[in-house]
Length: 312
Image (tube, rainbow, N blue to C red):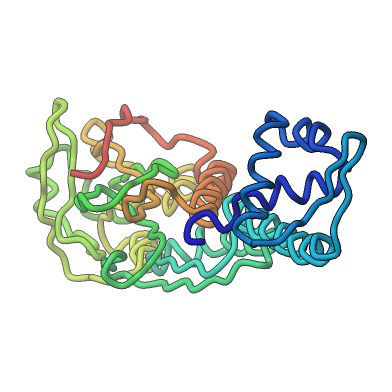
């Protein structure tokens, strides 16, 4: 029978249920001759008469009644299979593996992901918080949340939120050591170091790199912030760390004319023709959730023009 095992089954079931070829054709939106031909071919393949045909009505043979019961089960199972598959494309299901940086993940990503999970309990989650750059293709992750600028050409990126960097220090530090007015003066100050070795600035539309130096280093943004508030030195941190202390005066913005261009918070995932609902819907939820966070609700100081940043 090969590839045409299903041919004629829908037509036969429709005729049996409707009691005529014309009514079956109307239901299936085909011609009555097509229905008749498909049923005849089905009987020929089975070497069994399934229907009694008269000028007034069509009725089932004994073999036809038995076959109809089996066919109806097959049709129902097939429709259910299509329905389940369609639901998978509409609703997030299965295992979602994702990764994010530790501090940002704990503060921003995890609460939003947990909200998403509460709305989709059929989803299973594996979330790794790590500050290493995970190879999500090699390690089998569906999604990663990354900060800054992107360089991975094998990935697709969706911008979730802005990420402006601010150079600042506590008033106590400025009172003791003075305020830098140029990048060359910044090199004479104690810089609080985080995970990065390079700070970037904007000078006349040109991005300038600066290698900070100092006597304090930690791979936690919150720890860098605490050290800056204590007057230990100058820091460069994202807006969501320094927004509140800048507004209260506990920190003072430095070199505002050289504030670096916006980078961003990104959702990155492997290139695919069709993005699975579990990823696409979570990305939508993260974008909407971050937009509602108070840390992103107001601009701090000078808001530089958003530059197109994507995979290189």
